[in-house]
Image 1 (cartoon, rainbow, N blue to C red):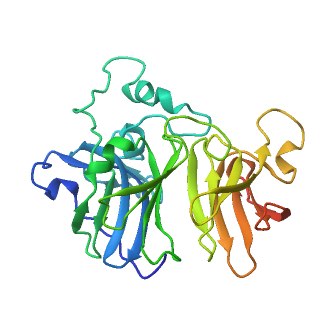
Image 2 (spheres, rainbow, N blue to C red):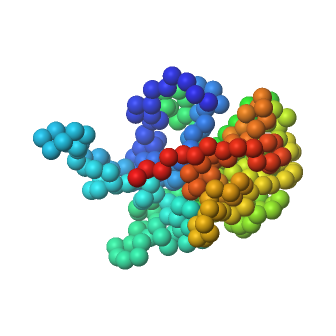
Image 3 (cartoon, helix red, strand yellow):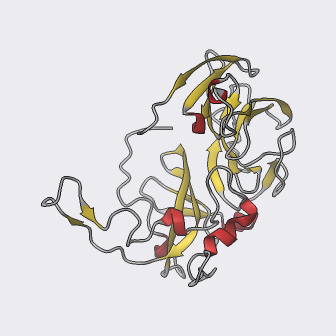
Length: 294
C-alpha cells in the first residue's frame, strides 16, 4: 500500500504505444500496487498529446509564483478529460453534456478526448505491461481499483461511480466474474449504489463500500458479495441546524477504511468535514473533525 516510491515521469507516456503517438493519459483517477512490478493505474480515457509550455518562475513578484498557473492557459486534465460530471450531486447521465460545454466551440469526442486505456497495468519502472482496453466499454468513471489482501486468487476490483457498480475481474483481466450493483441505475439497497467511491476489507473477506458521491451510506457485503447491511443517512446541505454534527448523518461518503484489530470502520464524511467511526455492524462510536480551510 505504501513504500519508497519515486514517481518522477511515471508511468511511461501513453504516446509511447504504437498508434497512440498523438494521445496521452487523461485525468489520473486511482492506483493500486499489487506488488512493486504490478501496479494498476486508472485514467479517465485519453487526451491529445500536447507539449506542455515551460514553466517560468517569477521570484521578483513573490515566492512560489510561476507561469502558467493551475489550468490556465495550460490544459487541466481534470476539467478536460471525460466523462464531464464529477462532483457531489452531479448527474452522471449529464456528463457528456457538461464535457462538451455550454457554448461553441464544443468539445468533440475523438478529437478533444477519447475513451480508451481506462485501466492499465505497469511495472516498477512505469513500463506498460498490460492493456485492459477490452473493459473500457463497461466503464464510465472508474474511481478506485484494488486487490483484496485476503484473496489468494488476487481478483481485481474496480469501483465505477458513474456506473453505480463494482466489477470483479480475474487477476489477468481476461474474465469479469462478478458485478455488484446495477450498472447505470442509482439506488440505495442491496443491489444498487449511488456513485460508490472506495472499498475496504475485513480478514474474513467481507467488505465495506463507501456509497458515495451522491449516496449517504456505507454498505457491507460478505466475501461472496452478498449484501449484509448498511448504515448512514442524509445529513447537511438541507439547511437543518446542527444536522452535519449528528452521529450517522453523512454528506458525500467519499472514503472508508477498517482497523482489522479493533474491527472499527472509519468513514470519510467528506462534506461534513469529519471522520466518523463505527463498529463492524454500523453502530456509531466516535468521530474527529477536520479543519475547514478559510
